[in-house]
Amino acid sequence: MIRRAVALSLLCLSLPASARVVRVEVTSRTGIAFGYERIEARVHFSLDPANPRNQAIADLDKADRTEMAADLVLLRPTWGGNRTLHLEIPNRGGLGRSSDPARDEFLFRRGYTLAWLGWQFDVRPEAGRLRLYPPVARGVRGLVRSDFVVEAATDEHPIGHVIVGAIGGTGYPVADRADPANVLTERDDVTAPRRTIPRSQWRFTSDTTIAKDGAFQPGRIYEIVYAAADPAIVGTGFAAVRDFVSYLKHDPDAVAPVEAAYGFGISQSGRFLRHFLHDGFNADEEGRQVFDAMLVHVAGAGRGNFNHRFAQPSRDAQPLAPAFYPVDLFPFTDLPTTDPASGRTAGLLDRAIAENVVPKIFYMNTAYEYWSRGGSLIHTTPDGRADVALPSTTRIYALAGHGHIGGPFPPEQPAGIQRLRNPLDYWPLTHALVDALDAWVKHGTEPPASRYPRIADGTLVSPSTLAGAPAFAYAPFRVDGRSEPPQVLGTYGVLVPQVDADGNERAGVRMPFLTAPLATFTGWNLRAPAIGFPDYRASFVGSIAPFSRTTIAARYRSRDEYLGRFTTEVLKLLDERYLAREDVPALLKRGTEMWDWVNAQAEQPAAGAGAVR
Image 1 (tube, rainbow, N blue to C red):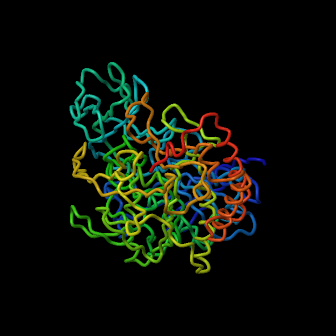
Image 2: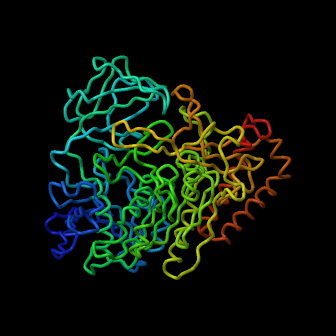
Image 3: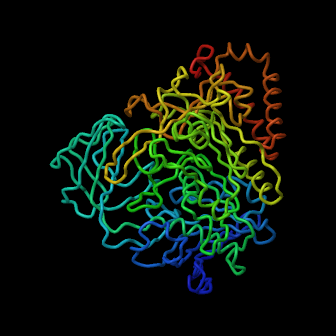
């Protein structure tokens, strides 16, 4: 493959002045596998502040300009193709695995036009990450908050959000290091009282970093509130995605014209899609439907820091920090429910229903989202007391026993967690559901039935009823965000999946590893004592507890018997359309590897040890 850099001025695709996408500046074109072309570009937009469909963008009336730009990576078939856009919302500026046919051929084989468009303004520096270049509200000042924990004594820490390495958000620089509003506190738990650290004991080492005498220590939550200025108009990220998709669907001279558009979001970017719907962006400036379908993956009940003054898009809600950010917000369900605290009645799809632009939606959540992201709230009342109905356009699939991010196989136990990391891979299920979503949109073929735990049948329960599980699950906070830090008013009611005698979840889409089990798989793991807070769940990961040889021998007379049962369960999922045919060989291979690995363990727990009962 030959990469050919091209001068911007020579490959500037101009559009009519009335278009919201005013030009696409292509910087490179590269031929890749499967007859695809990779295009890297910057998309330029013009926003009309007077258009009613832009009124939802916070502080747009204070913007210093009406133009903005976004980075783009586009992979288009050079011939054929299915004329359908698969737009993956970048997670903190990164490209997903589907951008590389060497990692995942699935979408390439089906001929999708694949795109990633920058929507987050504060992506941390790292080559290849996509960002938005939005207008800002000049002269606006306010307070910004940053909380964090450390896993080892640390002299200096960024005030932006750091997940790992360069992944996260840079946040806002401090406007005045001497401002008396700048306050650093520490506390011993999420809801514990804050202790103010004397101003003489800490300092800003730059406009984006702080240091503390005696270092920041594990086992504490630190929180800095500081004065900032000139916030980005963060909600323009929604408009960028809306207008780019509309441009591809309706401009025959677009860089890659399509007839249908599907939005795909994982975790943060799945929350982006939920917020996109809530704020009314699935209608373009002319009222036309933007996304025909959405696959919202491992987003839990969340929305995000995506459309308010001094919003920090990277902030989420992890077991310790970040906390109290406007991430998990009522309404949680697609159709209206009533918030018992405020008395407000609303649904996530209210705007889309009113404008007749409701997409087909698949929500996919793992066990982790039920334990650590309020996942049950997308299908229960806000108090967690009753199931709620789904609209005919929505399906929910709970991926039983999976972690938010699958671990390696054979399973490993990194230093920061107490148990082996859950190795289950949800991509085979994701592939099949992409096919099902496409068939639903284009042919009206009903997708596989929703599968998720319910209160009514006893498969959705209080965490306190599960012996051996963490003492509590994350419950989204109700906060009054008019101050920093915000006032905490209470929590919403969350529930978690019930488990069987093996400790594996009873409801949801159950992979053969749960229906022909050799281990207990959970969506939670605990933090190692050395990094502090050992009673809290670790971020993003689940756990695996292999059965003992005695337990396995009592259940399966031989390796062949196990493999026969495993194969039967694989074929059942294939028949039910929860698996794609091309994923079957690899899944059968992993079943064999799982048997060999479990039986090769030098030390096995007693029967059932480590299981959640």
